[in-house]
Image (spheres, rainbow, N blue to C red):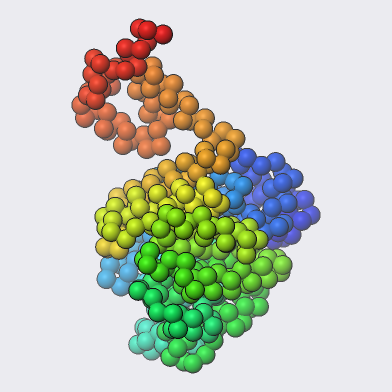
Length: 426
């Protein structure tokens, strides 16, 4: 039985029960929002893989996704395994394998086996890479290759897939008529657009969306409708191509949900601070509050090496206004393939953004750890501060660099510690 069907019947199966645990909603509202398409639970029903099931929705705690994956220039399965484990240990809720180099099926299986996180993939990468190997160009792909890749990923046990269904003939024409500074920066989006242009035909995932629905419903995998037209720089933010694609995704998402398939809508991208609220409100309005999965958003283009911070700034604001899932950005974004250290930094940056948004949203219990750590800062109880720190290892390492754990003060204030001094007054 699919998740939407179970929710409609009020059946508390193990998937729904696990996903509800720790969330600020009661059973009745949780079921209602699944039924309405406002909450999704990515879990492949035909996979026996044991995962940490999580739900995604605006009324829930904000979740974080970590992207990993090889490239043709750097393909190291051992590295990808370490990156997956780094994402898991840093507290990511979801993970995506975006590999385009090496044996993609073997890499996917390695990631599936490495960590108990719900896994997402982009099937068009497989279709393109297989075509390049056999025909020397992805432009020679056939429509059947698109669906063969989708079914293969579902069979392998992935829990959600990004499909760039919103790139159709109309959105592509909009892009051509309204030139951008950076065009298409989505890899899956550019592959799809170039294939369509070369072959003079429609996007198979859009043209035969009924078939997409059939496969998704069979496995109960969640469709993450990809924003192939997302802006890759703030100059292209909230333009006609992006908005046109969003309208197409809204229509497809509603139709998929009506047919028993769980759906997330993917969003930008590079967006200046003053346009983030507008973007979130627009998506919520046209997509009937389906979960919004955003990359960043990155609020400036000049922070090479610090884009995990750029993304966290935008992510906090986006999540406060209603984004449900933040796709992390690592320090190596725009520069190189991330390593495990980049993955760890990216996850923590996005987790900070997600937690800040939970507090701002007023979710019950969201501020509990903040109040606890503040109490122990007042007491100068370092051991307990570490217990409530998001990244305990980093906090302990920084503390121990200057002082033994037994000393009460730190090198910032020393004997002039404000909390010590005021303790003698009040």
